[in-house]
Amino acid sequence: MRALTGVLGAVLEAWQEVRIHRTRVLLSLIGVAVAVCSLTTVVALGGIVQQANAEMSERTSGRPATLYVSAYTNDGSTVDSAVMDATWFETIERYDVRYASRVMQSSELVPFVTGAVDVPVQAVDQPYGDMHRIRVTEGAWFAPGDEDLLAPPVVVNEVFWDRLGRPDLRTRPTIRLGGESGAVGVVVGVTPGASWETDPSMFLLADDLVALQAADPSGAATSSGPSFYGGSTSYEMWVPPESAEALTEAIRRDFTAALGDAAQVDVNRQDYAQFGDDPFLTTKLVIGGIAVLVLLLGALGLVNIALVTVRQRVREIGIRRSFGATAGRVFFAVMMESVVATIAAGAAGVMAAILIVQSPPMQEFVGQGLVSDFPPFPVDAALLGLVAATTVGALAGLLPALVAVRVRVIDAIRY
Image (cartoon, rainbow, N blue to C red; front, side, top):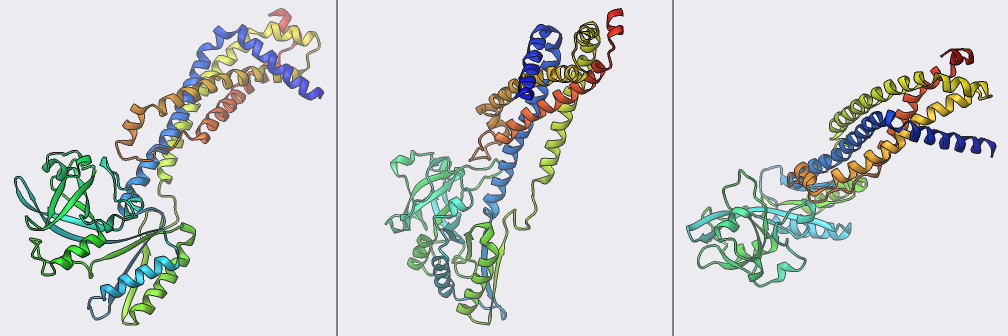
């Protein structure tokens, strides 16, 4: 209890000293607050940059862990697509895989006002949107059960939408798939187009593409001939990373058993975390280096001002020693002045960092439209800022405290 009372007394005494000498330490505290604000902001923004890089990778190769399944024969013949599909559906049901999708590449002749265009088609299953973080700026992605609609839903890119005249998707605008006499499709969503995109493209549900091809098996509806359904169909599933290795072997075994020994089955990961290493380690190290440098600059300024302050208080310290203050009490009191002051400055810096990072303009600037799930302000960044402020205060107060302890009473009287 006596130790706790002594600590609380030293803290209160330090706070009183800070209030008395507030003008003298104001500039140093501003420097610490700015340093802590910079440190916390850099760490928090680093989290947003890391999220942006992760989402960009996931849009192309899927989220960790995404397994890709393919099969081919040693003699170069095409694997039976019906057997592949049947085995695929059995597999995802057997292992209770919630996110799985077939991916097919094809094309459909679509008439626009300016003329018919052979539009590339990517046919997928509904979970593909979540698996690859597909962003939709207008309308919505495919919903479960859309494959049962009479008119196939279509998600188009922004170039496609522009050529349609940017109609309101609530009016259910329609297009012709396969030319003027083709099937009617309904545009339900628009994906953002990159600055370099100049050609229209679209997503269809895999079952809808199969139905369109069954209605026109000759491929007459497409200007480029029949689609590559069957031979080029790829299969993806998003599974928990800790289960990926076991599922890889199980799926390879099941597909080999279904297709026969003549088929070669490949099951592999292609997401950014496939090798187990942290792909953003370099980014983290750079961010950490910048943050430490900023903090050191703030600490140097504080140490300089703290030394000057102690030298101006030699008489005061000597008088306290003459009234019985121990060296430990003087040491702790001088150090706590720096610690209490920097904690207050650090709290102000952390609050400023939160306001900066969470502001919509800053998130838009850093995310560049690539981040759909902005992470909340990281608690570890705020704690790091407060811990850094406390550490800087302790280190900055150490040297002045040692100087204060070495002050002799006789020197203080002569001062």
